[in-house]
Image 1: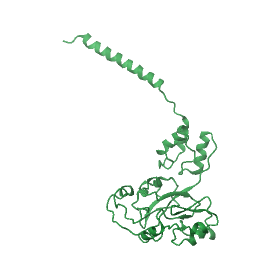
Image 2: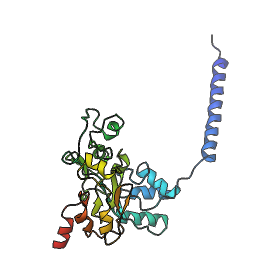
Image 3: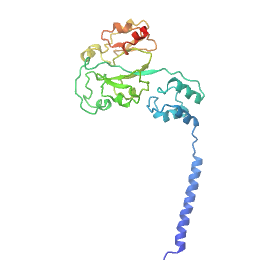
Image 4: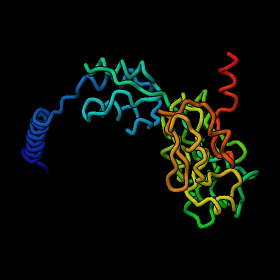
Length: 277
């Protein structure tokens, strides 16, 4: 037969322990309380919520916290543009930082029409998977676009597509978040100012003779574009020409001079459209 004391004592002990642990938790919540800066919530509220990662932070929550607590710049959200940058700067009580609108573009035009293929890849349809397999890339040029559409999968704005086996960034849809650039295993995608229309559409650092063996439209590093450019916007480094968008006037002198047509207008007819407008 169980006595009343035999039941009561354990209940009292458990109750006392509960009160003690409750008091301890209450003390810990006060002692270790971390006050959340209300500016984090304010910035998060005006962010677009795309969570594209283009700012370099893990989603919009991470960027909001980065601005307030990590010293991140107020103009890193490409999806929000200049107006959002002003809004974030207002919340932070700082001067708005100018944002240069950018878009993605592919530094390769070596489709099967112009570039040799040396393999047939039949694995996972993902560039990041293919690149780790010996012979996974079908291109004879190891610097070119693989074209399996990883950039298409990661772009939350629907700006990327595969055209003729190459990645294409729709300038009307691309907001310049940089997610495709970060996920391209060949580093053949890059961000350029939206005003830039003349670029080198090649990513190869091979010497001219080697380039010609695998691609008829690759840059051979001859330097004619640099010599022709009246603005001094073009340099050649490691056998590859580079256009400085801050100096380039889109005059097209280099486009006319390039023997392999590896430098050109990346948006066809844009200059003609401007002249006729």
